[in-house]
Amino acid sequence: GESVGLHLPTLSVQEGDNSIINCAYSNSASDYFIWYKQESGKGPQFIIDIRSNMDKRQGQRVTVLLNKTVKHLSLQIAATQPGDSAVYFCAEKGTTSYGKLTFGQGTILTVHP
Amino acid sequence: DTAVSQTPKYLVTQMGNDKSIKCEQNLGHDTMYWYKQDSKKFLKIMFSYNNKELIINETVPNRFSPKSPDKAHLNLHINSLELGDSAVYFCASSGGTDGRLFFGSGTQLSVL
Image 1 (spheres, rainbow over the protein chains, first blue to last red):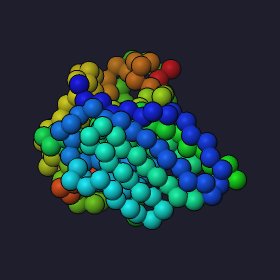
Image 2: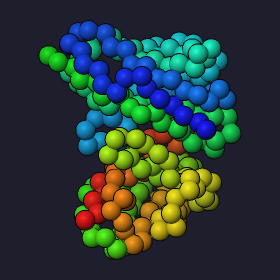
Image 3: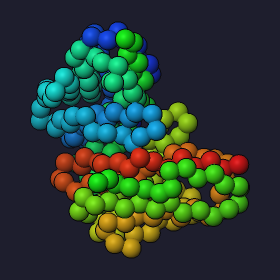
Image 4: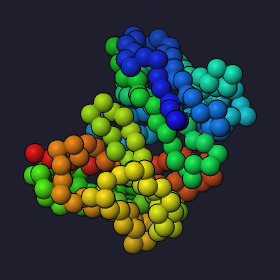
């Protein structure tokens, strides 16, 4: 069935380093992907999205890369800050899933000052 | 102004009780959702409503009954609560064609 997974459940970095969070997905029909950030006690917050007709999209300090050949998605955070510490989820949507987002396992990012 | 608000924030109750969680969105979105997040942070969709009509029901026990009185509200009623229902329940809404979801802050349900 559909699944979206992450290679690493935890990631620990020093403040100022760049972070890379990876995600593997199995549904080749997925056409839309989103990265969410969830801080403790809060709901997931949108970070950045990408459509399947793109392979890279940049935001403020964040970049999402999509490799459809190997069904891989990554989130790069530049100059990671302590405020970036959170759980990060990738999510995917298929073309006929009525807006349903399927979420990956989540990666805990910890940024040390 | 909170875009997607749900109440209560915390809910502690005994097994066998019936409880409700309420959700409201002021974004003008047509579609609303309930997601369940387990202790391992895994987020799984439960229900989705579009303009008050149920469009997604992901094999959720009959004890869970969503109700949408209008497109700005989606409530979740749970009968005969069980220990395994303990989780964080998130309401969300979407309105664009891209499928981006806007989440509420969650309701932490603890069944004792």
